Amino acid sequence: MERGKDLAKAANLIRGGKLVAIPTETVYGLAADGTNVDAVAGIFSAKKRPFFDPLILHFYDINDALPYVHSVPDIWYLLTKTFSPGPVTYVLPRSDKVPDLVTSGLDTVGVRFPRHPLTRELLAMLDVPLAAPSANRFGYISPTKPEHIEGQFTNEIDYILDGGVCDLGVESTILDLTTDRVKVLRKGSLSIESLSSIIGYIPEMAAVSSSRPSAPGNIDVHYAPSKPLYVVDFQTLELPENAALLAFGNNADHLLPAKRIQLSEKACTKEAATNFFAALHTLDADDNVDLIYCETFPDLELGPALNDRLTRAGREV
Ligand code: TXA
Ligand code: MG
Image 1 (cartoon, rainbow, N blue to C red):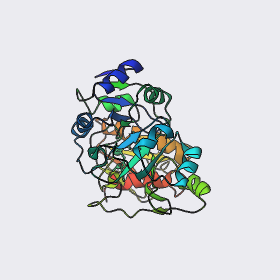
Image 2: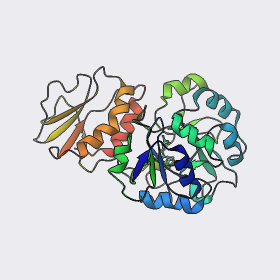
Image 3: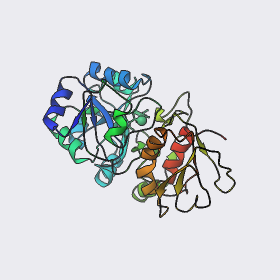
Image 4: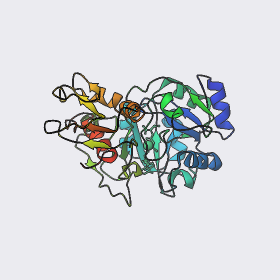
């Protein structure tokens, strides 16, 4: 699998219906021409992703997105003015320009304006949107740098557009804009505090069910390393051998594990979010580690988004 910063090459591959991994400010995406059904089918098969789990479309700006949506609510303009390009996905009624395969037959489509400069340039060169889920095998840890993708795929992806390490490290926040009040379908890199300050109320979090997920990233087991990850209380934890800890601030200072990764020395949830998936990749690949422990994060800023991923990736003790 080739890797580089060649935008013309990436654009030509996309035009030819191939798969290209793209950097975004959240995580890497596995992209294809969102109007080419065969190319989109290739994404599902490379990821081993079930067809009931819809893909989001990535656009350069709102003008490019307008033909793919209809009956757009005013709040969309306010939200995009404030947060886009950036880590938000807007679920809107779709137009018939969107292939059914992209939305798994839903009458809505997820629309996102990523912020990474390389991917913005690529989008500006193309006259189609990029359908892109996170560039990991279905259910596995999301990639925040090219090496994470190389570790999961071989020849399924034609090119990795190398944009370095992702700034934010946790996926976009998904907002349902199809009803009067904004609903959060997936907690993500845009905090609920920031969102509330613009919309003027605390949004409802959509109820989640794994058999009929509102955002199928909400399926019960997701973002998971292949080694067991346990969410525990470090105060009462008795460490077995070959255990690794994900530390946050000083919460694990009294423990002496085989391996420790500090997510944020200063106990900042935003910094921990940046490091979270990369830490799981590192520990999953470490032969001296058999199991991983983490504590729940504080319930503010990106804590809820991290806890959501812990709940899905982690196991009960
Ligand atoms: O940050 C991100 O959003 C990254 C980068 C690459 O853009 N993408 C990402 O895609 O996380 P993915 O496919 O891993 O997660 C998107 C989630 C999925 O759980 C999918 O089920 C949900 O969005 N989704 C897509 N279209 C939807 C729709 N019309 N209604 C509800 N949920 C939708
Ligand atoms: Mg994903």
